[in-house]
Length: 417
Image 1 (cartoon, rainbow, N blue to C red):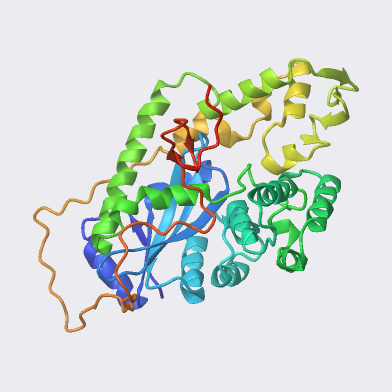
Image 2 (image 1 turned 30 degrees about the horizontal axis):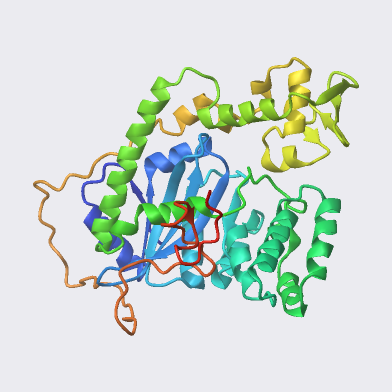
């Protein structure tokens, strides 16, 4: 039976890696006990992505990353495989399924890798799944037939509005406008996209505002300088980084004298500033009407709003905030537990212990020696820097206008006064 490594101050990490590689060829799964235990206090959203290793034996690292109540990066588990393909994704997801709390509804945010989608449908058949909006926009650029930059930016913005639209009526209206501006190739691209996997209006679960795989990209950037290490050294480096991260965030929480996390407080403060002039009409203790240039109904008891953002993000939208504030009820009682400081404290209650190597006893190896993973050497000169994604924007400082933009001194069109 495949082994799952749960590291908690394990001294013989190298032996454990050897054992797992003997059982499952070219695959090692790692999940720290502190992360497994405390993930239940984080938002039930997992962002999955991969990054390529640059060491002598190459390979690929698959990772599942979450966020804590203060929107901080929270790596849950990762695995080292020889390549990104269906059987490796299936093996990784099956091990992830074991360490998750039974019966907990998890939402996944990923790219559209074919092998991953097939594996996710088999292992997490009842979980909601959302495509990364940034990846979709990058793929969409290759299908757009318009040549001018302004037209492309307009269509991509319209596509984003379709994805963020909270109601089906608004989403369909924007979608029809978008399809009317595109050719047949774009419409074929859209036919392969299930609406429930990228549109807020059709999403069947709670996504807590996560539309992109930014958390996974942050994790990849976090370990970018360590991807050239051997597998054992890479695992040690990640373990040390997580150990320090848990320690630092425990110090931060001890300084807080509040009920909700600082990120949530700033978000609520922005809602308060934006809704000062809004008019609230009370129907009963729960139902309120928010009068703007249009009318919105909020049911505090059912935690629902006409805009549907309250049900999708599971966080008070501006209408819901205005209604709760007008009812004189405690706003913090309507916030999900993940946004409270007590949940943030619980998410870092366990420690990740160091793995000392001093005076480690010698290990007597059997005749069965585990060899490094079999990986094909890529053709051409090896790259050192990361290959940017297609459509990724790289900003530089223009020597003429002094702004961080995508142009330089020769192509600058900013008006100087």
